[in-house]
Each structure stands twice: as structure tokens, then as C-alpha cells.
Image (cartoon, rainbow, N blue to C red; front, side, top):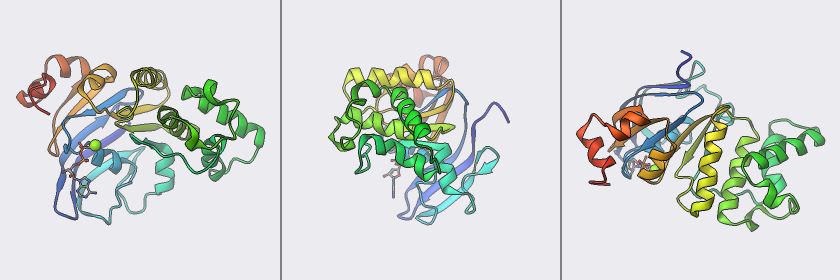
Length: 253
Ligand SMILES: Nc1ncnc2c1ncn2[C@@H]1O[C@H](COP(=O)(O)OP(=O)(O)O)[C@@H](O)[C@H]1O
Ligand SMILES: [Mg+2]
């Protein structure tokens, strides 16, 4: 179906210690849009993101039910090529850690692994990815410095560039700006607005105001349940469910 990039169908996840992190989730991820997962801590947002690129090792989960379809492939199938999947669906964490390599190599490494050999193409691709992540202007004259010599916000954008270089179809960001200052946060938010033309974005913001600012579509998670889903205009202004209303209006969480 063309109107959905990823189709989550009756997905449930229980961890080995018995925690039921997600309960019968049905959710369509819209292409070329910013899809927001929001709600209080413990709702299952990170668990869902980690499921989408199989960072949850299926062997560690006690019980996994349902389907997650991406380009016609069930992500949850044991046969699914996880390396392919993680290139197509990239993930950025709240405190991403650069590889112990130079700034340049942090971005080039994934391209090398993916089989790129031509140095000129590599340079061009690295530059383009660093520009897309709004980092080029700050690092172009120190590409050989270690990635970890950058500030927190720059490291965040370096990791973003590393993922963008691989031309993913989907990027997922889990609380990407929770450790960043307002200026860098605003940059990353405007960057997401731009790239959604080419890439599907799924983000679990660390607060309600970012959720409302960036979302095209939003889904409210509470204790493993998907309470309500909709276009951001209606969901944040006119929630149907009492529980969504209480959260959006700041009565808990
Ligand atoms: N690796 C894990 N093993 C066991 N329980 C986990 C694990 N990761 C998360 N949980 C539990 O699953 C529930 C959902 O957590 P999480 O997906 O992190 O929610 P959110 O991102 O919305 O805060 C919580 O009760 C959490 O304690
Ligand atoms: Mg989380």
C-alpha cells in the first residue's frame, strides 16, 4: 500500500523479565512526513523504535506477536537481513557516540562497508552528508580531528551525517535533542522539515512541545498501549480520548 511506509500490525512485545512493553499496536508510518511517537516515559516508544530496525534481538524478547511490514518484508522474520534493514531504517540516539575515528572517517566508514571504493565519490558523499546535517561549515577544515573532539551537539549531527550518507528510506530519532541547547535543537528540527521530502522520519521527542512543533502525524503511547493516533492538527488540539487530552494539557507525565 502506497500510503504507508511501514505498517505495524497487531504488534506485541514482552521482554524476558515479563514486562509487556507493547500491546497489540496497530500503526501506519506515513511516507515523506514526520511521524511522532509521544507520551510519558515507559510507554513503549523506544521499544517500538528498536523493534523497527531489530535492535531488539528477537531472542531476548520473551514474546513477539504480530507483523511489521516494510517494503513488503516482515521486519520480524528471522530471515530478514538485519544489515540491509539498518541501512534502510537508520537510528539516531539521544546521546550518540561517534566511532573512535576521525570526523571524516566517521561518515566514510559506513560507505566503505557498503562497498564504495572511489575516493572522489566518497569525498563528495561525505561532504554532502555533513552539509545535510548542518555540520560542514563547522568541521570542513578539521576533518582529520577525532569525532569525539566535537561538542555534544556536533557529535549528534556527526552521527546524523553518518546515517544520511547511507541514504536511508527512514530515519528514526529517539529523544535526539534532549541533551542539546535550543539553537542546535531548532536547527535539527528545521533539518527534519527539509529532509522529509526525501526520507520518512519517525521521532520520539523528549517533551510535549517538540512533539507538537514537529509532528505531521502523531501517536500517543501510554504504558504499552497506543491510545490515539491522528494528524497532528487534530490530535494535539482536539484529542478524542480523555487520556490523550489529560497528557496534552499537562495533567500528567
Ligand atoms: N531491555 C529491556 N528489558 C526489560 N524491560 C525493558 C527493556 N527496555 C525497556 N523495558 C521496559 O519496557 C517498558 C517500555 O519502555 P520504553 O520502550 O523504554 O518506553 P519509552 O521509550 O516510552 O519510555 C518500560 O516498562 C521499560 O522499563
Ligand atoms: Mg524512550
